[in-house]
Length: 201
Image 1 (cartoon, helix red, strand yellow):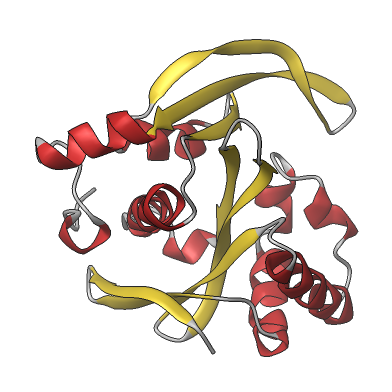
Image 2 (image 1 turned 30 degrees about the vertical axis):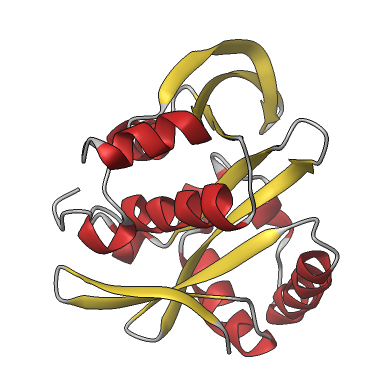
């Protein structure tokens, strides 16, 4: 198991690891428990019917990582798979990618996703040499939108009727951060590395 980083948050030990088939059971349990909540924003949760589908997704994700088409991490809280965060839609010409994330309801509101995104920014800009990282969220998904806002991403605009969710079109808010902006925020200590992000973030 490869661990990208780990940190303590409000008494919980959090690790960000590459996906393993052994994570499937824990992740499926989170999806099953929070299916109604998650399906508001992520329709794929409706189609995830059993643990075998999640195992298949772990296998698929690992191959996509090897092919450098995806960078996905499982968020584990006290050893329990609690959610995921990833970089996808890599553009090798323009050097940008998009972020996706979800977290089980039992682990929300603790600042875990904020620190996970800070870790992903560090890897994306410093190791994967991205120039720009984008986050897209339904305008009504306030919890999801709060995460990039805490890390000083700027709202680039709202895309009308951009997402098709639950048989309806939804507007999407698009946030972004560029490498020079990230480096400037780090230098000014307006944005900290994952190890220094405050626990109440």
